[in-house]
Image (cartoon, rainbow, N blue to C red; front, side, top):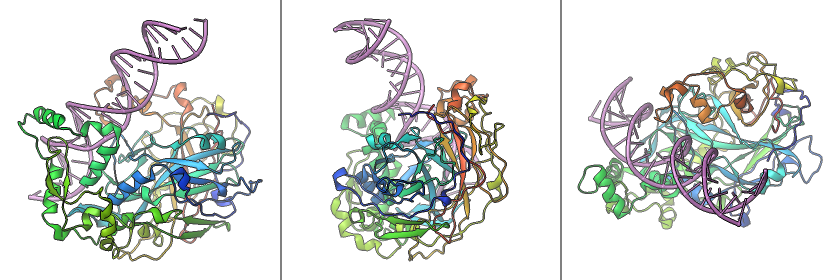
Length: 539
DNA sequence: TCTCCTCGCACATTTGAATAGA
DNA sequence: ATCTATTCAAATGTGCGAGGAG
């Protein structure tokens, strides 16, 4: 998995905007059973026209499952300690140069600037979004690795975690609850230092519209709960049987199975079918986006987004909201499973989406919202507040393997940054809520595991983006460094909950932060500042 | 009263160390 | 001594639901 080290110096920070070239669409491959959007930037470094980065194609794994969730309105739980995404983000990558090293990373950007609420069994705009959470990147732990490695098997980001803890010390991606987000996959060509800090760094971005979701602290839509339980092995305990129903009922000191609140809510909602039609722009959360979007980078590079197999995508979703007059028998565990309830018809009913498309044609599709003209927010002053290690400057430093491990990240200066909403598309929308400006910059923090070296961070001039580097702690490691209140689980021994300096053993995992900037004019632009990430080695 | 969030719980899977056997 | 397979406990990942904050 890991490759040979390269300790030569790099020159500059990650300057994506310097990566000239264009982007082309990538069609899904039915043979692979996966498909998705694909965007890429060509690189001036690319020598082999057959192996340029724009030839990389990415296919979303378990797309059918994603679509199921998408149709129901995907929700992702966020917790203080961090929660994995389910379905997990897994992709099949092709078209890489087998010998070239790449870095794969994910960021999650706001899909719009709204806050939502789940009302009358549908998502509705509840106001303006909270200030954007500090943008963070999740770098695949295998990064950097050769194209052969990435293409050998599925690339899984299942360990990515989402949190609503603004002070999260673990490097989890920080989100606001009840907000809509869009994950994006970035493939960055590693430079000679196995980093992407050099000039002419090539990268491409891939967006799968069906992976968009609303972050919640508890599930709002019963359909999503059921889908999670049915598909997530860890939730198997909530899959009921008659026996288990009785067992649970006994555990709950009830003679008979009970009906959960969610079932009751569903029942209530179902009894008011007239309220189920939706004007929420979230209704469109799941309509497919077809067509190609073309973007120009400030350096002249172009980018296109293509719904590679948009024909496979459902026209829309939130089936429950559509079939207002219909009922289905929903099953509920914890006592209520196998009780026939007057809920709406099953969301698994494949015919439902076909029959009820018209319910969603009026409101702007969710995808279209994300395709809406970008908006601009204030750039928060916090953006300039970045954690800086005591190590060497990021830029142009090599051989930092010899540096002592950096101090643990403070609770969190660099985390207060703004995040640009997802603005990858720019088609007109029927959105009735006017878009607000979106920030010209957003800073992201990158987790860089398995890196044996660490580099410091250059000071940052106002308005400039940069990288900051510090230890990325594994969950267990991090638990040893934060107050126990962050981790209610009893298994965390109190004595382990004190903050303490990272040991040399933990120094091989790093948390990088970097800044991207997005400009309204170019729809999607990546700027780099003075900083750079150094020595992404294979340790 | 309502919405949203936190926390502890039970249950399941995953992981990794210890052990046995070839 | 090494490698592989098995076992088992700990760690981790789930949704549920009570209760609290605002």
